[in-house]
Image 1 (tube, rainbow, N blue to C red):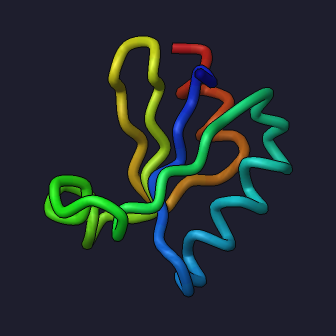
Image 2 (cartoon, rainbow, N blue to C red):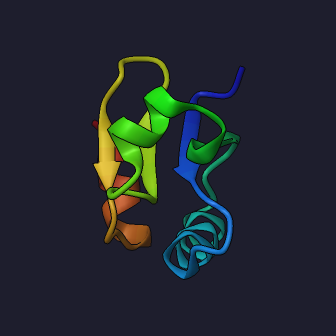
Length: 76
């Protein structure tokens, strides 16, 4: 399992932007979870996607974020 998880949905232009920001920030390794695959995830993240989660401690970073914000967030 990766240290980070990006919660997103299909056909989400903000999610596409978030993926580009993650690449720019050079996030080392992350998994993608599609919220529409789970009613529980849809309820939790449906209106918030994209959301970046630190799988190690459960912290969440809601959109909007940029590469600098991600770097500070990862650093803790």
